[in-house]
Length: 321
Image 1 (cartoon, one colour):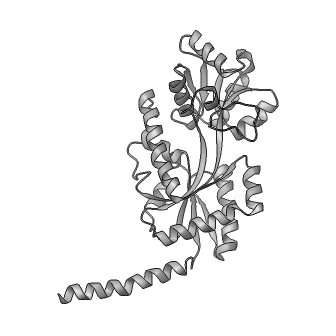
Image 2 (spheres, one colour; image 1 turned 90 degrees about the vertical axis):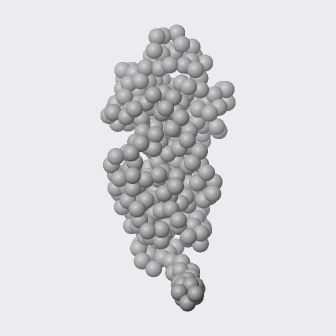
Image 3 (cartoon, one colour; image 1 turned 90 degrees about the horizontal axis):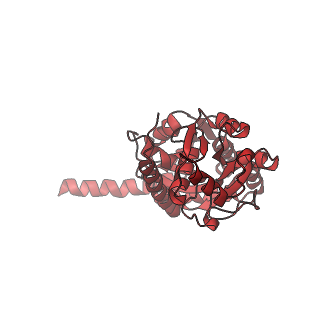
């Protein structure tokens, strides 16, 4: 009985201490892990948010690039960190694709993280080389069905987002394609531009200059709504292919079991940063659409998309090299 009383007393003392620690947060620098190399959309967004949050928190927000293993190295670092708000992850769509492609990941993409906010997005675009003669999605489907193995579709590699986007569309549209993987986005894009392969799904930020210059022909945006940079292109959903949505999002996660007050504080402060004109301008200039998906909706999105891409990988029989 005495021991139980002592434990209760200790808990009563500890609880206010935890609350005070959260009220005073942050009392030291915050680490924002970007699991990609410098220079890409994740890095640009991470550094933009870090600068704005420094002004809000009066503590440095240190962007730490930890690329490798399809983003799983940096992601694992955050999964193992203390849930105290001092280590955050700027995750991207690979976070929900990797579990199906890397079954031995040392973390669970859903259970080992606390969703804070999904901050930005850009869709993928179905493009073809002009030499195909294909001008629209119905023509693309007809051409695919008319040839054994369908059209050749380039991607940045087996299991890459561009590959999974093509596999998803093929499943929804009931077509086949011949996959031609390359060792990265740049050689895949070069192959489509040269006509070495006939088609592919490109990130919208990459596709826009090629489409505007006439080097490639855009057929559709792989999203449920039109995209601001390519308003002339229909969406796959509007053409009867709902469920073929594919793109890249960029959101902030923390380790699992982050206390609710810290979740709320982080969400509030990052949301305020996203509303700053300079931050919004920087995000738009990077070819991204700002988002404001809160903790509960973002957590549900991560779970749903992990299941979605897992099914795509299984149904298509995709195994990483």
